Image (cartoon, rainbow, N blue to C red; front, side):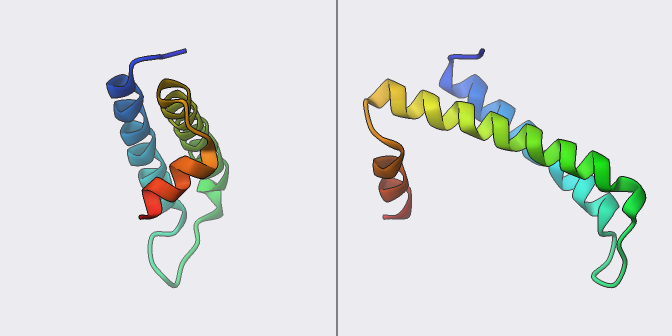
Length: 76
């Protein structure tokens, strides 16, 4: 598991780019869905969610705050 915050942020950004690519393949236009790309999009979304969770957990552990406090800070 990566513990460096900068590495985690970079991993989130990379996972988001992969998810964006698979989403664009799944939904190339607002009128078309290409179901051949559904499994890849779901896998990329799950990967992105896992990496974001690791970053969130790292922030909470590093700064001794709860998820609720982090969400409050993010929305302020």
